[in-house]
Amino acid sequence: MYKKEDLKKDLEEMGLKSTDTLMVHSSMKSIGSVEGGADTVIDALLEYLKDGLVMVPTHTWKQMSEEYNVFDPATEPACVGIIPNLFMKRPGAVRSLHPTHSIAAIGEEAAEYVKGEDSVTTPCAPGGCWDRLRERNAKILLVGVTHARNTFIHSVEEVFDVPERFTEVPTTFQIKMPDGSLKSVEMYRHYNQHTAHISESFDKMLEGYFETGAAKPVRLGDAECILCDAVKLFEVTGKILEKKRNCFIECEEIPAEWYL
Image (spheres, rainbow, N blue to C red):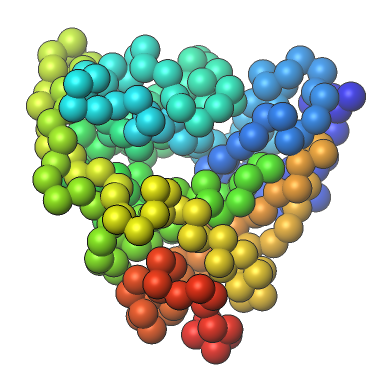
């Protein structure tokens, strides 16, 4: 059974610093048996990155719809696992106001970081929370999951204006604002006629990201993990998108000469 100090040691061995900005996508069960469960994992992250900024996705895209369209960031559960749902209820946690692709953050400038998501019109808008990971030289830790869960790559596709990524018409959502009022927003959603989940195609670059140094394999407990550098990930992904904008969907594999 892993203890908190074991997990903090794993974070140290990854090369992370206490001042880093870290986005964590996670599968709790992949870590194995942890004394104290998911709360201990969160404690390890927050204590190790005590001078930095820790974030998790608190997505609600699975349940939000035209019929179920009121997003209350204080109460709406995330559809991406136990760690995000516990994390966003921690003291000091702030959650962005995006109705389908929100994040929760704790630490340095957390409240400032999550601002503005009630004004975007796409899941991972240029200049939004996901895109700004590269501005902070953030790291992205995929715990027991692959790039199929790496939301940052969606934001890179948005910057490069990749076609066939959104619904033709937006959905109207109501966001419960901090003062209790409801704000009406129009939001385009992820959609591609050839695949139910666009992000499943991102694993075509699994080895490519390793080969370019944009990502490296690491471990947290029993979990096989991937630690990504947001700046390098953007640069490498940008290179392949410049070769063929819709390559993740249209190419069976990404030619190595496009990124090496």
